[in-house]
Every structure is written in structure tokens, then in C-alpha cells.
Image 1: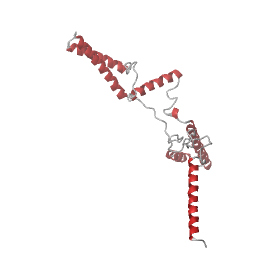
Image 2: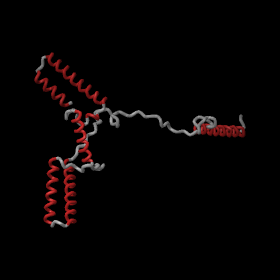
Image 3: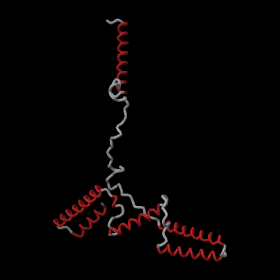
Image 4: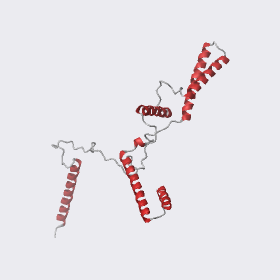
Length: 225
């Protein structure tokens, strides 16, 4: 039988041993497995590896998805009404500048000034309708002028197409941005559908079914797909 004093002493020793082991484990965790960073050539500071590149997620709904659900970006087309409004506003600005200039000179009366302004307005509108009166010539388009930028991009693409001798329907809208793997998958899927349709047609011919009714049934089936 152990004495109570001996049991108490053993309990105290066990508690002190556990505390010591805990402190050692804590120090090792703080210094990456070392009791001290001295002699290890490190400061003991732990950080994540910034050189590791995570693989891109290409599943459904991911930003780099190759599925058909990831539609190619649509090409922004300029709004003709907004462009016409901007050009008419530029014409009115030029007319107002002419009016201020004639009023400052003081050589003409109000009716003559109005007549000169109307002539200039009519001339500029006719040039605009014929396509010669474009937006600010020689000026840099602002970033907020999205329709002007889209129009300039369309003119640039048309000029490049003519220089390369390409047809207008050479590339469909958004097709140039389609991923090569997605394009190949789409072509394989279309080929599989066509092959299945031909096999089904051959089987129907062997069975001697009604060609017209079978064609209607196949047409409805593929239209539903």
C-alpha cells in the first residue's frame, strides 16, 4: 500500500512532466520541428510558398470552363442612334461657335447671322448623312465613349479584313474567342450525332419501314434534342 504522501508526490511529478513535455512540443511547433532555430540557418519564421501555382479549375461554372455553358464574349456593337445624336451635337457646337464669331465681328445683323448658321448646319448634316462627317477627327476617343470606341474597332476590323482579302462571313461572331479544346469537343459531338443518325437510318432501311414516317420521327427527335 502506498502512502498518501507518496501518491501525492508521484502525482506532482507526473503533472510537472506533462507540463514540460507540452512546453517542448510548443517550442518545436513554433520553430518548425526544432527546439531552437540556432544553427539551422533559419529565423524560425514559417510562411507559405508563394512560388506554388494552383491548377486552374476547368469544371462546370468555373471561370476557365471548357463546356458549352461558357459562352464566348459578345462583340459590342455601336448604337447608331447614340452615334447620330453625338454627331448632331458636334454640329450644333460648330454652329454656335460660328454664331459667336459673327456676333463678335458685328458685320452682320441677326437675320444674316441666322442664315449663315443655317447654311452651315445644313452643309454639315448633309456631310454626316453621306458618311463624310465622322466624329471628332484627329481627336482621341475618351474611355467613356463606348459606342465611339466600338465603331472605331468595327472600322479597324473591316479595314483589316479587306486588307487580308477575307470574306465577311469568314469568322462568325465570337468564334475567334472559342477555346480550341471546346471547338474540338463540339466538332466531335456533332460527328457522333451525325454518325448515330446514319446508323439509325440504315437500320430502318434494313427493316423495311416507311421512309417518310421514319424521317419525320427522326426529324422530331433531333429537333427535341
